[in-house]
Length: 420
Ligand code: AMP
Image (cartoon, rainbow, N blue to C red):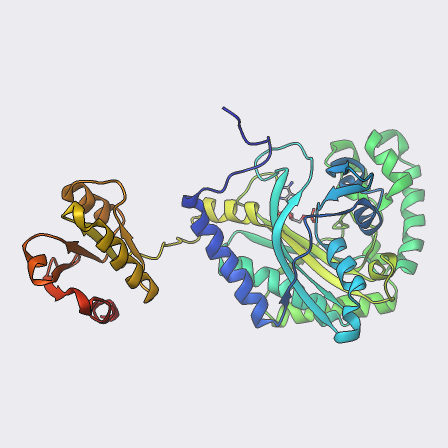
């Protein structure tokens, strides 16, 4: 037997209901905030991600599925979508059509990570990017959308963490302060953190290593080094969140891995999914559009992991997704009438009803069992004595009431019954 690749999942019909339920909430919420959907290719030239995410990040340095295609181009399966969306934004000059572009997406991402619960090699994200505004209210809007979607799914055990990384200039001063502090503790840092000291110093805060954690407990915090513009921006975000009833906590160690973040960063974390607890993360990035060859325009966005959110929902039993019931199961009593059943099924479907019929030459009893299993609202018997008078028998499964109907009047009668 050939199995699916490690770290990839089949989403079987029984689970699709939950996916569709989530996707509906995602699309509806984005529509309410006037975000438009964007779909970009599954793969891009590698440089889109190398430049757009940053060479020093784990994603680019360790996790990308990169390959050389037959014409010698280096291509990469998208590990996230911000860089792709910004690439498309620049390529199509979307800024010329709209002052503020509010875009959302939903789709698969690929990272060669060590698979574990909540961490896969193909996983799905929904997310958004708003390109063109410096307003801190857009940062707040992003956090509110992410929180609202997750809360609409019924999740309770949540924490919204926010932080500010300030503007690059104030960060530069702070990085020097942090570097001096870490230089005094080199003996107590992990190898990984010693490397990050050179490449991406803020990320030492992300380390899970106990030695690093105890050094970082007393490290100076960027929040204490913000300039007045950055503080004002952060205060505006916080008071908008307060007014929106989004419960948040400031986490001064929340730096997130990407080089291009400016001002706000945030994460929504669930207490119901074990160690991979981040359901979504995002923030403001003011240098990225320019980095990818576009005008110097600001952006803010987030990405949320669908598998992890659904896992949290399952663990909290936060919603039930119900399948739409079959309206009518057509039972063919007389096998010679199979093509009439097929035709009847078709005309009822074309009138908008949900219909199933038998394709396994089953006995009437077995067809009835199937109708019960599908929880059909009605069964329609085609064949038997009634058919000599051009009549078929419609049975209401809830009341067991039966009605003889002329086969020409079917659609109208069933539609009427279905409305009641
Ligand atoms: P990131 O793009 O790394 O900030 O991730 C945003 C969100 O995507 C995370 O909070 C997770 O919910 C989800 N995510 C990231 N990587 C994975 C993965 N390998 N498997 C499943 N979900 C992931």
